[in-house]
Amino acid sequence: MNILLSRILKYLNGTLFLDDAYRFCVFFILHYQNFGDYSLEEVANELKTTPESILNFLKYLGFYDYQTFVETYYKHKRIRLEQIEERMENLNICTYVERIKVSNDNKEFLKKIEEVCTKIHESKRVILVGALYPMSIAVEFQTDLISFGKTVLQYHTYDKDMIFNENDYVIFTSSSGRSLEGFMYTRTNLSLQNTTSLLITQNPTYARRKLTTDTIQVPGRFDGINFNYQIMTIFDLIRVMYYQKYIEKQG
Image (cartoon, rainbow, N blue to C red; front, side, top):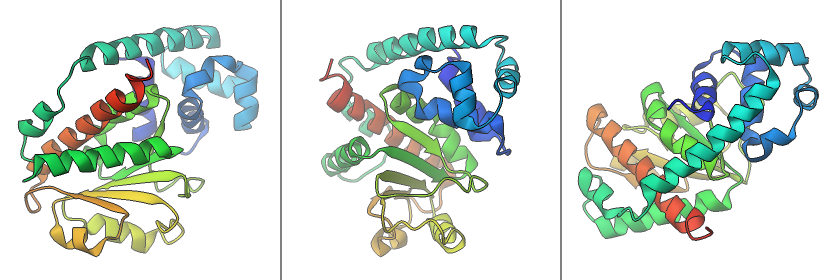
């Protein structure tokens, strides 16, 4: 089922335009837990735009009035949580680790994943940075974490309003690690010194240099195909462990 949140993310993550549609999607993610409390006029005022501009975007998504959009939001929000609960009930995360070679020490690797979950929980916002395909793999992770109440956004170079702060947890995915160094060189206004950050890479050189707060180094060397499976497994592990540690126990 293509739930509303997934459709919003599909547009937000893929668009190249910083316009009212983009800003509406960001607002929807930021206020996902209580979006239904906002009227069309209130959303328009928050975005400094017109109700007509928002309605034009909603028509693009297949909605011809704001009320139907909100009703679908409530319905799909409930359905997604039910799907997550059903899929993750009594799930053994060890099977995920064994599915693909992500570490030579599974026990230590799971400890690292648990630390990542803790830092995500303590953060106000998670920002994902990486190439197109790794970021597309992260969408399921992004959808679930937003459903759990955590803001998760992909970084876009054209969004100058997105700056990193001390409450962010920034996750970089790069098999070689070079894109991280390039990012830091070209985005001098986005310092990682005040944030908590994670690099997922195959390159031991960047793991040793400690450009980020944390590093998960997986086996392989510049093996893009295997790396895609590795980061899929890692994102799966994070969302499952996060659910079991912070959501399931609260229920």
